[in-house]
Length: 257
Image 1 (spheres, rainbow, N blue to C red):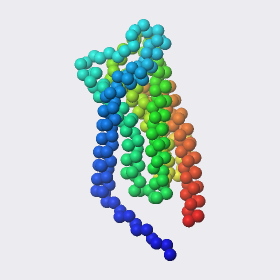
Image 2: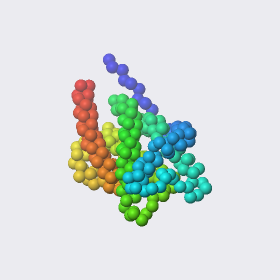
Image 3: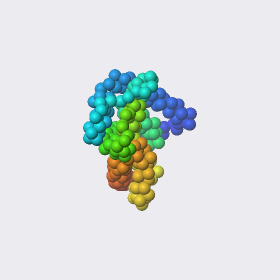
Image 4: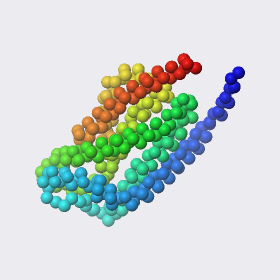
């Protein structure tokens, strides 16, 4: 005789709201702790990570000027350090953010689907970092295109806010864009869409990917657009394949049970 498991008590709207508030507080604290580390890493990140692409572009275009950023207002340096620290805090807290996101949505999933918690967090962090690296590697070409497009009479002289805001925004935008397959896989797990529906909508998705990539790419250059839209389409096809595999495994498990 098989004993029935007691069904969990369903949560009310206010329970979900309280849990959401707790998750948001935990994520905010994680970002704050990461931002504290970003304050100390600011000088190293500026000289070793963010300035080299700008310096190489100046050298490639034979611009005889010292590679550096210019502050035009007294508060520019302070605001730039704080903004950069928040960006660093967001990146460093990504595992905590994804874990709390997963824990918030797991009540809507069954026991079999909850097994994807660790793969969800690991793949999410990996894809975000991969997107940030792709953005950084393509930023030099994008910056070279933008400076060249302005003409020979334009001398590039950037403030820390505009330059660092562009490169960090690109890295975060690419990182979020590379989370695209995880969203698709989750939608398939939740039954919102099926792999067959995604396959039939391939042409519409291609156009949508290009449009979204053009919107979230701040520089607007073709190099960044291609560097983001092509991987997103590849991830789309991979998400469809993974969705088909998961659906087949689910059907096989139901038959065995």
